[in-house]
Length: 406
Image (cartoon, rainbow, N blue to C red; front, top):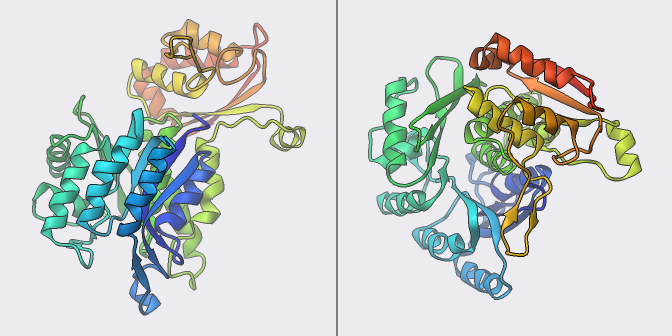
């Protein structure tokens, strides 16, 4: 899905590695044109360690910017909102920004307004009600547990939750409108933290967890949201996008923990190469880039993103054909490469020529969470798939690498 344009609406804290200072480089590294609508301008984020901050509210500037964009007929393939400073800004996003998302585009709302059992300074219950209305109109919402409880009007959950508590909370939020609810900061056991992803249509909830880093840093939620949006735009299903974003945040935290002087933000820049490898399928074009990357196209199969054979073929479609060869027909309808629906079409896609790599072009496949795939697909079916991947008939040249992640 290269060439897509995403708009992110949130504040610009000039120092502190959060908000737009995190969203823009992360989304850009994922390969997307990133446009911004700033909600406020701060010298730095509001952590007490900075001993104060300067602040300029940009609410009055937002309608003029949007009117100019509308005159120029600018539209966006996706929208991701972060910190909105007041109820008027929430209304601007709902009434002026949402209509600028293309038909079929994705509207992602991170209701950044609370954490650790309390609202951010300056927000009250009336703001929570406005944010709930915005979340109801979104496609995907990314609340942390504090924000989710506020939106649902429920008491705050304990530090370690039960699956029943998480499901009840997620289903209540999904019932208001969004198709997908991603609860962040979930913990079902000591020492682990993660997310729960609920699909409203199927009522299925999927969890992913990483180790809990004992020290907290500002900006981790912004990094998660931006990485989630980037992975999602690359065709990852929400659960896989959430897992990828969480692992990126963990890597960022571990990189930051190596520097005791880096207290003011998360050092996500050092973890960007990890995220790029996970989500980017861009093919190098220049001779120098091809030499640097090697001659093989690289693809990633996320073994945690499917639980049965139907979902497996959906993942194969995303990996090998999604977004390839698309063009507008004379009637204006979008024509695209056929989906992979069975082993024969998987074999054809691997030969190349109509998907994301050329006919006979050598490829390298990294299959993560391989043991999860074995459980989901069954031993016999999985061995058949591996045989198809590795067979060299009809000019097909594929290398398979397997990773079993915890």
